[in-house]
Length: 447
Image 1 (cartoon, helix red, strand yellow):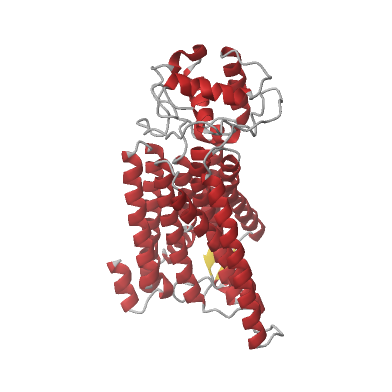
Image 2 (spheres, rainbow, N blue to C red; image 1 turned 120 degrees about the vertical axis):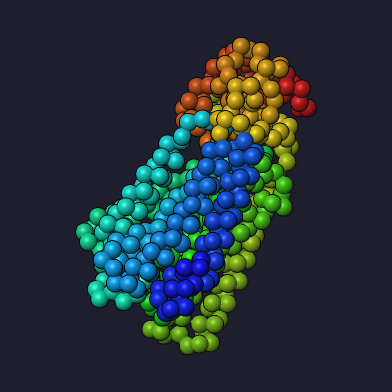
């Protein structure tokens, strides 16, 4: 911070030394570090390590800004590589904020394949961007988001890797939202908070694209837009870190879930309004000032109102208390894809002393596996974990997301559990509900 302030006072660096952007990155790093400490103390060590990485990546962004500005100001021969590295340093925080939030709701010891895909794709995007994108000559100071300030070698390769990175940023939000909406009660709320956190990354990319649109044809000052991007990136990191802590502790309070969901939805609506408004207000637009004001006002009312109403309903859905057990079609595993024990008790996820892996002695419901449930039907430790997550209200996708296994594996475990518990198809309730009730009865929980 001191180095950037000194460089800025000397007239170097432009937006890279702007106090607002620098303070935002530093604040985001502090928030991520605090979240890392809390996640580690709560037993979610894998999420804690990723949050630590998020804090380090934001600090590295600051450090690379100092290096880039200083080498350019000195005319050093390493100025080009330093600027290229700085120009790519915004990508790792996006990956790490997603991975932190996703890891906060997992109990399996293995690294999910989705995490590997995100890490590999965005790692490749960072490397390719650093190697292929360079500042145009003559290079006068650190450039902003202005497209003409950069040139890309092997443009098709860069474009392909960029598209791969954008697709990777959508992987975890889609996976977690699907798992959340297919689950029930506490699991649905917890996964919903994590899903909202991971959505912050693609929204940040959309905001970056809108800045480019706002510059041309919107005629927005590039330096101002670049500072806004730094603030947005830092805000997304803080939001994701806070959501990770909330999800790890068991996000069941309607107020907290509502705040998270509404913040995500309103941010998306704001981006939509800003994008549409920028195009409408472009210098080449045939609309007059009054017409532009009316159109933007209408977009704000419709977009903001729709987002407020829609996110309110989504938050209510995520936190809805269970009423009656769902009746699902008998499809072999009796609704293993969509059905769940919605009528089960409200139970919380335990602290995980092993760094994200559920201990064989502690189930996902926080009940000691050595008392009662350990002897239910001769289930294995993994089958007890699956049944505990089922009793908590998780769908197949929700169980898979938490235990880091495939949905096919979950289905196989459920079939084995039904056999060991002597649950056959038929009856007034499906086997998922009956199995969940057996677990809760043996665990000493109310039905």
